[in-house]
Length: 358
Image (cartoon, rainbow, N blue to C red):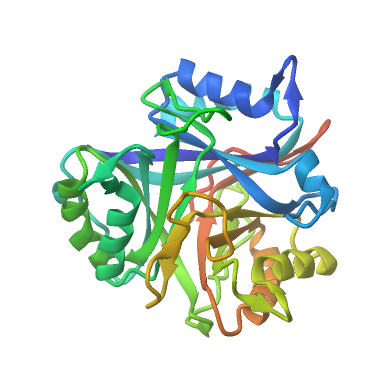
């Protein structure tokens, strides 16, 4: 199956509550109840938002209220039906909608956009899925690396759903069934070659494909983010997203790149917010796949910094990103057709989908 779907992503503090529940718990209960195709909750390691409070893996604020990202993917009808409930339970946070193509079943028959565009593949798989006796994430990353993808990062969810069934982690268990999200960056031709092999590796994998642009690779500038208008022809706001893939062990001015980037963006005021997610395995460029084979956090794991904002703010933020990633990292840019920022009773933006071709 291949069709146009929507990806909903909500960014907020993990300890935010709605009634007697944490928001993340309530949101995933909603996704399970509505039988959403797939969803995953990821815990971040650094962030700041409109209130300009930094939460980082070096500060007490992270242990008090770490950032989380909850991602859900399904048809436009199914996701749109969630929006009022998701907005109603989120006091403070950021909600985005992005168009994606969801693929299941025979991946070899999936049409891939022609042309020179780069694409982002996101592969959703349970942690207990195995290939030749080893966790599937290793086989998938090796396959992507052999086909010279620009990079791939594996994120371990702490909660999620698959076909309406809840997959959550428990502190005193092995958590073998929690969801993994593998994000890979490559060309359309590379995706066309990989998808049939991916289907051979795993039975009925669930994959989304999205259009994006590679801006930097291994520190080398390829292209700046496209200069998009603030609104489309019907006046709906257009946003953009930068994703900065680096390694926790790689430094800028003596500190990990993600910490330096968060600090510089926060000090400059160019971005209204940013979130950092830590992976457990991955690669970028010609580097071999690496991380922590025991699925425990370590210094060699990949990290991804996400910045979503107006095209003007993204252009100014990219100047900082370019400087901090002068010799290392993979940087991509995507259009985000809808964004809503919530801060108590204040709202900024809209979840009406913009339509702009570039």
